[in-house]
Length: 516
Image (tube, rainbow, N blue to C red; front, side, top):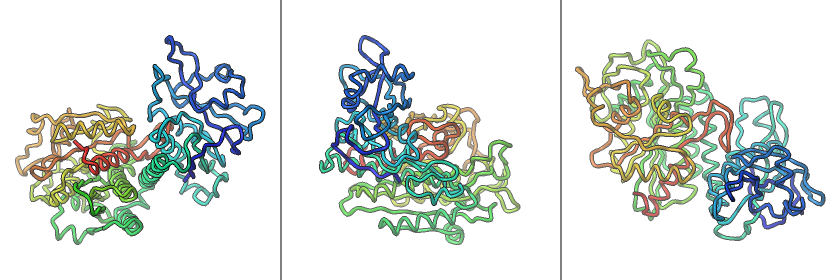
């Protein structure tokens, strides 16, 4: 993990491998001329005030996350200047938005892989900017090289055989190292980013190493490290308890399912938040086998559980005054002689029966059991997180997750929290007329309904397993959880850690009494 420090040192005299500055598209007079962002005044002065012109000559436009490198001017101890685009310059002298800073810092950190130290002279007006830049650096510098030759063992700043080691150290210029607010912002950013990167590691780990029992063991280790209570229900306990959904989905695999409960409590907490994560460590589709070309990334189908795991640990590290319970519904969905079949009826933990019309609609089955278990503790609110439906990807694309809820104010609060931390989200409805499509002639409900609006149908199914009177929301992160294209901003290729920052922010709002 990249080491972060705060510094008030002037850029010219700082010993580093590179100085990172921000540039933007000028807003004045509707001009697209390049402007140098605040924080880089000393660098611009060293170029006799002509830095913007030099960068334009090199092709820089100020576009978001665009990176341009050029030699540092004479007298600088760092040999390189890295200009990163911030997008459009704010009008009327307004500060740059945190997400613009986060993305710029991430793009620069990724571009500086293999470097020992970089100084970030980006616009830093207040502690919130410190947090955004720090998050961007830590998330942008992320690399998953565990399975590459010599990758995991590469020394700090050393080049591994199959690539470059992440940026080793980053100094954030403009914030006093002893300023309490800036220190707190840095500490929060570090905790959240480290746990988000933990979620990314889990998502990127192949299913032959991350199966339900292995995932549960990692949760137990983290619980011991961070003072959490942990309970793991194995297949015997699940059978005794009547968790028909989790057992049904996991029945076709040699790797038995698990239900993990992680509990963080604070002695002064007044609210209890329950988080439920879909943890399908590999999804073949079961008997309703996925077609060719749809299996290769299905190790990512536990992204919801990874996000919940990371968020609970982050809440503990931040010492939030709220009780947070995480439920990880872990199973592997495989076809075999013992697998659940289309047409089978499962008796769920709630006592309801479900006719399984499609074994590839398995996530809602494991979540149903976990939602009912979470409801039994009567929390103030439940949020479930899942890579649940391809329909949500068709609706919102690859970078935005859907938010559904049984309470409009709560849905709005979650949407706003997601946007605040830089995770694109969109509120989605739960149309009552779609519920009829899940009526079954042999069971209380079927696990499939109308094809059109499939993401909404899945939300309606989950609502059936939330305890009466409990506020609930569902985040379908099927689009943004796994990035199959190239990296952008602070987002790498592969597991993204989607929803971790939203869940942490919601926990903070609950702790402060500001959650709608």
